View 1: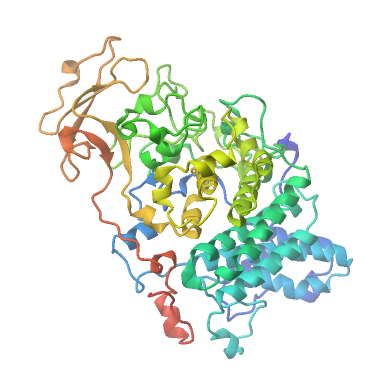
View 2: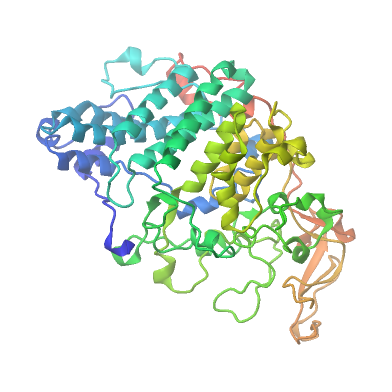
Length: 597
């Protein structure tokens, strides 16, 4: 059991704590001389374990920048599109403290009197962390200064250097990841990255940059896109060939997918390549239930619900008037992942005895997220659920997508990748020839820049969206596919044809009633009851901007729930990037903004 395997979360306060007092123009100051500290493998392990940084269960709430959700949070990209911010007041993302900590290790590790092989393992981990750091920088700014070492305050030329070209920085990232992949040990403490975790980031980075260069013509780097796509396919294929991992599938299509997000032991799960371990008994707990479920700032959008296929593999959006189906009908005969990701009609929340009723709160969609929520009231359980940092499903989808973009994907390769994921939930296999012969017309409109293999690429993109919903990957996908225009659509929620009574639990008995906003909700003893003797929940209904409780697209005449009345504009290519903070431009005149910022 995972409780007998515990992660080494040891941080050297005297080293890393002191390393975080300044910026790049300061040495990492320590109370221990590097000559006295970096001498043994234990020293290197302590320092590198102190660099450990992984996403946690809060990632289930980090989809707010994408088209998967509606939110009332002050999300940067949505503020940018609404015209509420500019280069002068975007001041985040330019921190370099972590890089200094990493480079300090890379400058001092060689003092250790240990074998070259041992050193390379820890150097590989440090380079893995440096690659993570710089990939985030490239995603945000494209061109950034590359620093391979710590800086002396007298190094004015380096301190005030211009940003390096994206191509140089990416090549350096890829070199770091290649080194890590070849040198990091396979056997490492549970909850820390090993060889195959570095391989996942290697493949992810290659796929990101390969597709980014292919679709972002403003970079003038399209000619080199295939080199990265080939690397993504190769490294993903090597992970697959290792036979170390497999899709978690116990033959329970209605449960197995959800198990990945509510398990107290993912350390032994065959699909999880890297796990962030939580265990309240060892003072490492995290409970996100209260944020995931309630008046939260992330509500699933109808557009995401519509992306899920029918159980027989046909398109939900091919159903006549699919956009006017009510909540109960939307969940009938769908891909089982939908009901393992969203609260479905008839779902019962512990400790309740009756089915849960979706709350139609103002500015929310009516849909409620289940992924990341643990259906329990036991705090020990709630605080001891692991988070899957890297899943084998990502490897399979990266493999298929890279080959599809290269134009070399065949049915056999689909069967050993995408279709393994589909089979977990009992979905029909994706057929390459059929997908390319009949592309989804709605997806064609959304992604109109695909040059070849269109049908299968669209279906792989659908799989990524569905499989990784609320796992904080959708925004990066939209950015690399150059699909920022999809963010301009305001999220919508459940559809109601007008005022009246509605069933939300799927038993055919009304649960709620929508009344005109001008009508006063009656006193409790005057409210209408349904045939079960349960009092209906009342909602005052009207158009957005009114004092109604529920906003419908056409007010009392019905429509989908609407969440905002803001006009969004996505400037291409400007909004695929963010500006360097203005104060940094003032301090260093060699730094230049890109793409109109």
